[in-house]
Length: 79
Image (cartoon, rainbow, N blue to C red; front, side, top):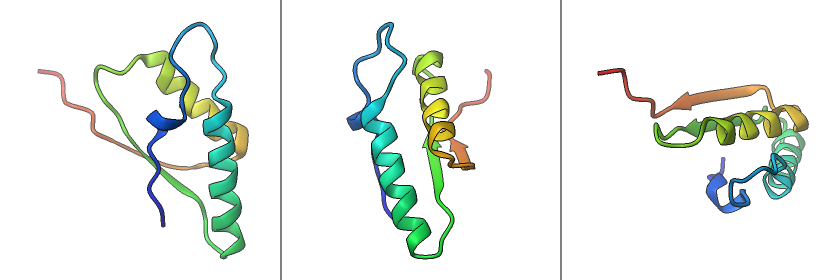
C-alpha cells in the first residue's frame, strides 16, 4: 500500500472543478494495485474546515477513474 496526500495534487480552489494531477495519480495508483491483483482503496481523512466543493471534486475524481472502494474518516460529531 502507499500513502498519497491529495493536497499536493489539487490546484488552488477556485471556479475550476478539474483536478487533473489528482486524476492522473489515482489512475497510476489503480493500475499498480490491479496489476498486483489487488483492489484499489482510498481513505479520505476529511477536515471539517475543508470546502465542501473540494470534497465533491475529489469524489468526482475517484469516480472518473473507477475507484469504488472508499473509506472516510476525520469528521467530528456535531457539538
